[in-house]
Amino acid sequence: MSDATISMSGSHPAPAPARRTALNAIHRQLGGKMVAFGGWDMPVEYSGITAEHRAVRERAGLFDVSHMGEISVRGPEALDLVQHVTSNDASKLSFDQAQYSGLMTAQGTFVDDLLVHKFTDDHYWLVVNAANCEKDFNYICQQNHFDAEVVNTSDGYSQLAIQGPAAIKVLQPLTSVALAPIKYYWFTTGKVLGVECIIARTGYTGEDGFELYFDPEHSEKVWNGLMEAGAGVGMLPCGLGARNTLRMEAGMALYGHEIDDATTPLEAGLGWITKLAKPDFLGKTAIAAQAASGLQRKLVGFEMIEPGIGRDGYPLLRAGKPVGQVTSGGPAPALNKNIGMAYVPMGMSAPGEEFDIQIRNRTARAKLIPLPFYKRAK
Amino acid sequence: MPYPANFRFTPEHEWVAVDGTQAKVGITDYAQKQLGDIVFVELPAVGAELVAGQAFGTVESVKAVSEIFAPVSGTVSAINSALVQSPELLNSDPHGAAWMVEVKVAGKANDKLMDAAAYEKFVAEEEASH
Image 1 (cartoon, one colour):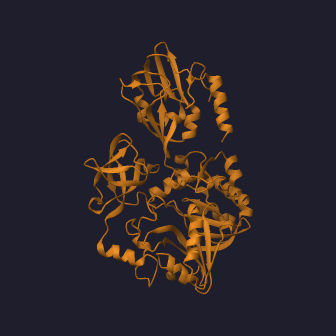
Image 2 (cartoon, rainbow over the protein chains, first blue to last red; image 1 turned 180 degrees about the vertical axis):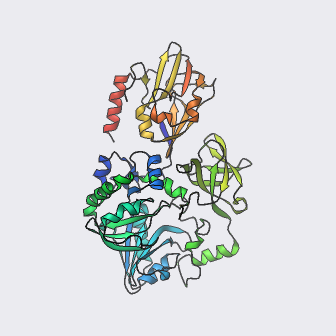
Image 3 (cartoon, each protein chain N blue to C red; image 1 turned 45 degrees about the horizontal axis):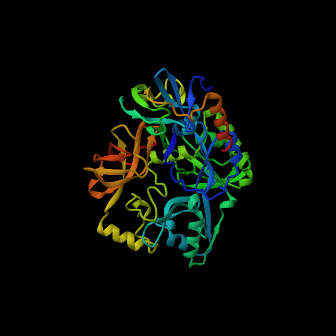
């Protein structure tokens, strides 16, 4: 046996030694299988990706995502800087509200994708991908021609994501903050298990849930308290493997796969985070030009209709010729089929279109279906 | 899970059980644990020629594709179609119901094969290095 391809999404060769979150020892105690991810030593699975995935869809799962980066932007012109570097319209945010956005190049492609949180008029807080954090921070500093201070606050936070329909039931007894009134993509601050937290109703799984940010010093206390509280509903600790299959089913982009510095938000189906009515942002001219001239290619979803798994990087063929490429692909544990996302030419991007996917030395048929693959019942 | 005394093992974590000129081939319990949930198995056709040390099939877990190498040379006389239907058998019964192919052995077996005791030691060393 030998790994022909490891398609664990977002994996990068880790510069040794890999960084460890404050929960590294706990992950090992729990039997977590550790892998290098974005320069970090992270659990890819504990009890198994399929079981963890289903736990999140049906009950609850707990993820250590402390590898994620956090960057604060403060000052009288904090909003101007955020508006300049991101594609979504941060001026629309209220206090305690978050939005999904893109950190853009002048060419209208992605430096990263991120969550923008607004604390106050002069304090915004960005959550970015672990592997991109240094790059993002340097880029934002470079673009900072404003009266704003940019600080990489990543070392100041652990991040836990509790996700799934039962997440609120597990978390509520541990905090005096009323969770039900927090709407999706809003946040508040308050104590969980006696530890001061940012409590955000956000996630990367397609389920209801919360993301907690707090001083890493309290990591084991919060993790253990949540695990204990979740035992009654069958909550499982979940690794990056399930995080990937969950976000894929939910049709969410992963940097380095669906989006990167060669893809635009329009191609990636992220027109909804691209506000061309905003007075100015990096890449706006290029994106507006692309909107005017029309797209050449588009991100689509597919399901395999013949046995086989179309994985990241595999070509999509028409009449034997490569016309596109899989960006993320694999089994969808809650849907019992093999799915994926891919870029294909606009003229071939309608649901129902069929392709052969080159899988090593053979091909298997795939059919385009609408994104997202999975949508939770409201 | 114990490693059966009548099996021989490769350093790439395949097993072979030889009975006269017939041999059954599969992957070990250690291999399935490393792979995690197995979701797809690709096997050669009956009649295909296996060459010891060369890839003859693939096993896919949720996150990875792994090639499987032949522990012996010979002609495939049967494949486990139940395994193709239910790849998860590799997680539940890797040394039994999840055999992959049956081979009519030709020539000598790979002389790098380990017995169960040697393989257990080999696996313990691999685990310690993680």
